Image (tube, rainbow, N blue to C red; front, side, top):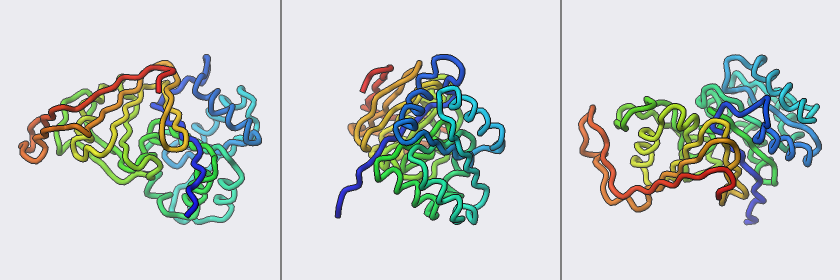
Length: 257
C-alpha cells in the first residue's frame, strides 16, 4: 500500500494574534497563497459561527487571502452534503476555529466531509486548528478538567479525537490557564500518548506527521511518559492526587524543534 503524502498540521494554542505581527496567521496565509489563495474556515466548534468567520475573513483578507469560505456544520446530515464536501475538496488549507471540540468530532467524525479532509491532508494539504480545533486533532482528546489544579483522575474528561496525530494528546491556552496538572494526568492514563501543551499565540507546525517546529510568542510543553516508572493512577482514591515518577518535560520556544 502506498504511504500517503502527508501534508502539514498547524496546531495553535488559541488567541492567535490577529492584529499585530500575526506570525501564525502569516504562516497559514503563506500556505494558502502557495495553494491557490483559497482558505476554508470550519466553524463547527463555535456557537457564534458568523462572527468568528467574519473575524478570520478580515484577518486573512489583510494578509492577501481574498477567498475565505466559511464551512459551518451543525448536524451530521450536513457533513454528508455534497456541496459542503466539494467545498473542502476545492481547498488545500482548512482552518478549524475554537469552541467545543466535541462539536467537531461528533458532527464530522467518519463522515464524507471528514474523508475529504483526510484526503486533503494525505495529499499534501494543510489542516489548521486553534483552541478546540487544536484539541480535536490528536487521537485522544481532552474535553474537560480543571485548570490550575493538581491532576485528579475523576476530573479528567477524555474522548477519541480526529486521529491526525494518533499517539498524542494536546492542550491549549496552556500557561495562561495553568494546565500542566491535567496534561500530566492525561499522559498518566496512557503513557504511550505524548502530551503537548501549547500557549496562546503559539503553534506547532507538524510536517509529514513526524516532527514539528514552534512558532509564535509563547512556549510549547512536551510531556513524555515513555519512561514513567510508577503511577498511582490505579491506587488513588476518588479525591486523591495522581503521583507519577520519572516523567520527562521539555519546554520549547519559537524556532525550536
